[in-house]
Image (cartoon, rainbow, N blue to C red; front, side, top):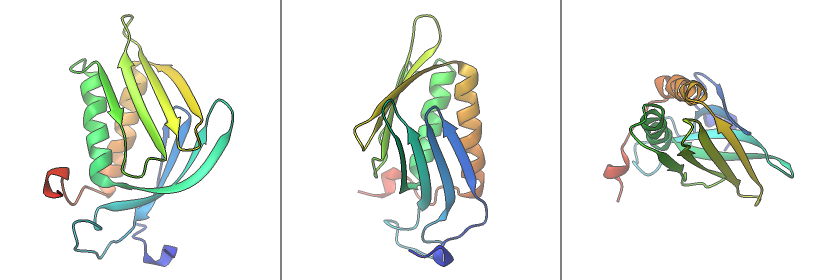
Length: 148
């Protein structure tokens, strides 16, 4: 879709370990169909163990909101692990709290490459803050429960 069809009110770069996601805008800003109106368009770069993979994908804003909620639960020690498996699975993210309080985070890219990082609660809070900035500009227009 040409960029002229995007709502580009604000672009955001979100760095999550080896994954950089650039939110470029709302894919269908005028759409009213619940299957189409929540999509954001992005570009991404994944620096895996073996390759650096640029790509483009879309996320639904509600998926990013769910990921943010899961990160908050992990950072607040209300959950011990999470999995982020977006609809367009360019990169899946898993995280599990270690006994020393740090968090193991694994990334699996559609190219087959992987990456692993160990992070602190401060890192999780930075990711949460980055997602909050995105969601302020592009709030979810639906919930996953509204789509069957």
